[in-house]
Amino acid sequence: MTVSLAGQTVAELGGARSVLARQRRDHTTLARLMTDYRDAGDGPREQLLDQIRQLVFSHAFAEETVLWPAVRRLLPDGEELTARVETEHQQINELFADIDRLGPLDPEHDSRVERAFQLIDEDIRDEEDELLPRLQAVAGRRRLVRLGRAWEASRLTAPTRPHPGVPRRPPGNVTRGVPLSAYDRTRDLLTPGRDSPMWKAALTAGAAGVAGTVWTARRMLRARRAGR
Image (cartoon, rainbow, N blue to C red; front, side, top):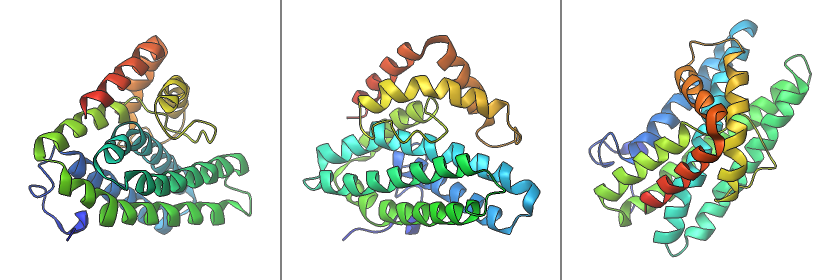
């Protein structure tokens, strides 16, 4: 019987460096930011939305590059499980692309944001209640820590904005997504909210992406293989 990640201690998840613990930390941060957005006034809301956007897309990219390939290798129904989550990711991607296109003053803006938040909530529950506990049942602590390291390397060089046309699976997501990361993170540095938890990561990874996106893509593919 699987147990939701939400009800487990960090030790039970494999330690702080485990991919499961890293995933849950991001999920907790996303839930808090979405609550803050719903409770905020007009001014801070766009800064909060920027933080949510950066975290959502870097997190999803790391999942798709490192974590879901491991699920497909280790679970007999991994293809079905990850396909459902990838569909949710694509829907979130398209909604955020609409949100960016519409702008905060458009009458459709708030409804698209709320729908995106609902999908993010559903995605978190699908992962923490079913998919990740299934992975936990077949992966030992060492493997979870290796996956955690590869996941973090991918997250720090991932796109931070919606790109619906980028594939959801390697190697296409890496070869097409990493070059976009440099552009995204440069835009992030030029927008308000530099005190966001993703700002330092954006500065470092954005510079790295500008200096050599091809090298970064190769490194990410090696990191994904190391997580096997």
